[in-house]
Length: 188
Image 1 (tube, rainbow, N blue to C red):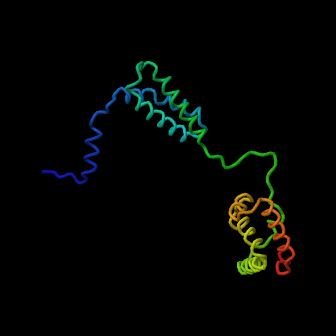
Image 2: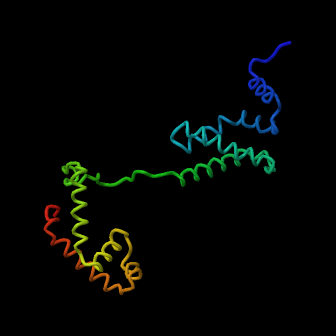
Image 3: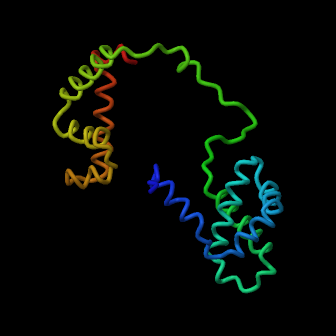
């Protein structure tokens, strides 16, 4: 008695020996495959993409095989599936680069600026918060809601129960005081 060494391989071989549900589809693909591949290659610049496109179109054709009434028009059906699939791929593609007349150049300030030291950044943050804490409560609240919480002027006014004009003028005055703060002078 012989025991198969690899049972999964013997099961796969048994499945491969069973006939496909549509033998006419297999015959069609073997007969017309090279012609359809040439059509797919005319739709894509890359031969590997053409093979993928043909496989996708043939999979769609296989699913619809029962619904195709006139099997004499299969080439037209598969060509339409190729074209529709390629159009869908084209529409879904991600564009990372755009062609322009001029190449974008980095700004000189960004190129020459040294990497910021984390300690210096922390010193700047501390100085900023000390300056903000010197502001009157109402201006500080409006400034924090407006810029730290990123609320609009209307939202800030609603939260504090004041008019939009009050928010605008209070924030303007608070920013003016921050500009005049001597501790923040090295930043400017």
